[in-house]
Image (cartoon, rainbow, N blue to C red; front, side, top):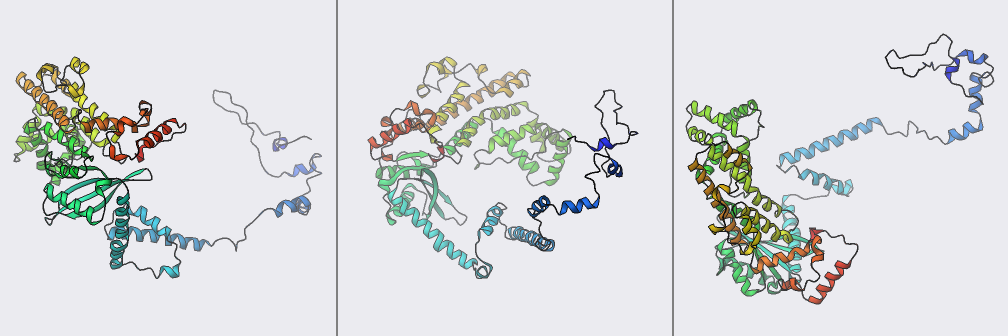
Length: 552
């Protein structure tokens, strides 16, 4: 049987469409898709083209009836009303506006809307029962205080009575001059480590005895056997908390001799950077503070004028940042922002000085003095060593198994900048005399960062300034190394114990055939050394390890 298309019936006068471009393309025919009466006189088609009679005949055929019966066509009466759909969509939009208005009216954080909508969707009450729902402020307060808080507190206390836990405390004075001691416990449930708020205890004063008595009184009044279950204590470096002779930790260790005590790592590293910066000229800090306080703290006019300088110099219109004593990571961000905006700041401060604006001369002279910029470039080079370490240990997942290696890496990085390479190569870090001038590099070979090295090639300062600059940078290195070693003595039993924790990293499992030696540093963490060792060896022998460090 031959198959024919409409092109078979195209008249002889119809020409093919030919491309007029230089490249010859295949010919394309233009088809006219319409019924042609000439087909009825064609012997090949006249037998099955019968006009309307053929349509009636096909409609009554068995095949057409069978196929058409399988086609489901919705009745117009069964289709959802478009009017109803529009009403539903309007109600949904109005509800969304009501939720947004509720968030605005009550000054609720925008992020709450994510959970609020899911909460509304999860309500299973029927409308007739939903009308009986009552939870105004009085009842809501009662539920929080008498149901949620009480139940949660009792469950946590009952857990502490039968399980090991660590204690994290911090003292603070509120706006009404009342001293409070915040108590947080770190527990492990279902192989997941979590920190949970336990209580806020008022203390008469922030002495070691007062803090210790508040903690012990709380444990005894709730019958928590802290002498058995307390395995760790963590606090800031205040003398009342961490003093060697008489402090909260020393008093607790009298009750729990095998207590593992650690200072806040992030706070300690921030203090290392702070003491190091004290070896640099005070004018550097004053410059940073004056730029923000004088120009951009409360004057929108100066902010707008400075933005015009940024646009003219094609510099990103970022705002200047304020140096904060309580925000440990703010110094590096402030230094980077000042260096980013250094050229606009120089030009703008010069304009202010030319206009006779008070206090602008000091800022302008400092910005035009190249040595201050070199100090900022030095800080931009060295501070990330401490800041990145700090950020890593502020993560949500525990990384105590990395603490020792990261401390050693940061300490060595600082030592490499001013200690002779041969001394570093042949001396253990724990035994290296980092304050002995015999081990120092010559003053002109001390490494002070790539940007400073470029500035030195341009001879922007004289010999006396250069010698003083290098000496100050050397003192920064020595002070940082000393403060790190003072807070984390690498040859102490505590730091050695942290080194042993590297077995928690799955990459290091093969390096530890047994946990026998490691268990000596943590006697309160286990009850049966043989069961612990067998469990460790069985874990190593497993072929389908899928270990997540989130629960360590």
